[in-house]
Length: 322
Image 1: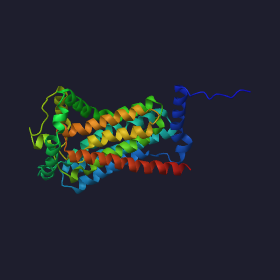
Image 2: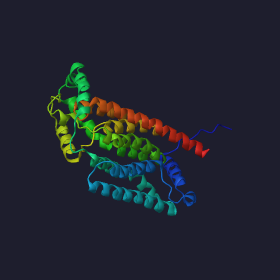
Image 3: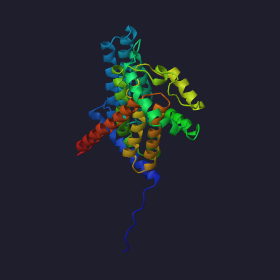
Image 4: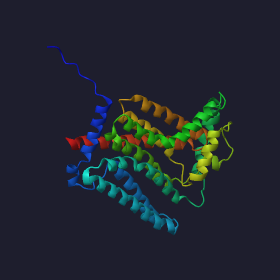
């Protein structure tokens, strides 16, 4: 008798395995005991929105904010409970997929809400200390001259990387779908949300503004590219004035890279691509004067803390499954 050769699984079989794992997590039999069972990533977002609602009662903010924050965030919480309940009825795949993507617009809402806590006037004490290190990095240590050695090419690439940071969570989720790993979506979102929501939560305690507005014209790039003009236009319309420390741009960039390196190991190009993008983003925020170097380092620290915390969550999940 000849030896049987193991046949590699097809893409269709991979898809079936991924879908089966997702349906097992939300099957009717499992959901009966806990009809409104929330995912870990959902609990993290709910905790953040509850924190914002409480913060609006504690800090000195306009009366409209103290009233609006609890109402808006209560609606967000109810929305999640409705989605969980709808999925629990029959383990409906549509609602399961909707829950995968529902956090995406709420990340933007989380960012906009923390903008409600911007002070009327900034004292710029933090900025005066941080900019000293930036001048050393950009001028004394030659970072700006190195970046501009080849003309506008690298400056434009850095600005493009800064622009692409908004797409990193969507790209990461898409890759999990493309490679049939839907069952890992919640674990990725747990890591990513921890990385970006921690900076948002810290913003009110480090009131600050970006160097491009506090020190206009100082240490600016020598090249004015169209991508830079686009970034400035977006920030003028959608930016907030609460704080720049820690940098959520840097935290999100590295969190997406670390998340794909951990949860999509079978396709290492994704994590490597996002890792390179994260390095470009971290460089761009300082070179483009969107952030201080201190912000970027703190953002990286937030991403590393998120990796550590999410590893504890993963370990707990494995132990719970026996």
